[in-house]
Image 1: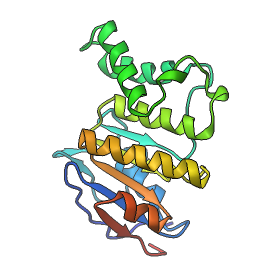
Image 2: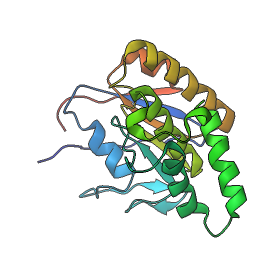
Image 3: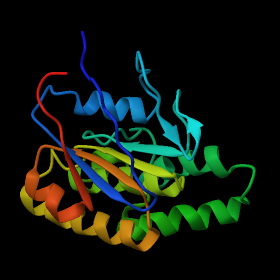
Image 4: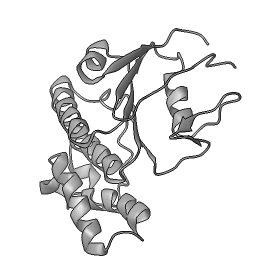
Length: 196
């Protein structure tokens, strides 16, 4: 099945790009190709001149479902990523401070010892965002990260994401079906048509 055809886009460093389109038009497929989770049958993805053909710490993905490890605490869910990426370059104390810094960015430091089942859906999504920022990716990929949240929580987390993105000059590619969300958050909005 041909899902995507003639996709050609350029995202500048520090830019926030939103992709909108109907369900089933290939948005998530494109994000998975950018993240290195899927290989395209033709064409290539480049990140700072390097071909993207597998997952890597230079790209962090936040999915609609929080994807937290249920047996780890909020702190542990971020620490596992920080230890993997910075285990050789930062001391244990530096890694701890970095985990706490990222928890504070998303206002979750007070819940660091809680397990995922002990926090709300919005709090879980904040932890997922903190984990993504904590590995200092070159690009943050968001696949409808607020879709499962109620309107009040969604607005709060959107504001927090925007604040953190602006503070870190993070490059972001976000999929959404919410036009208002795209207008609020993005520097550039791409519209995907139905069909390949």
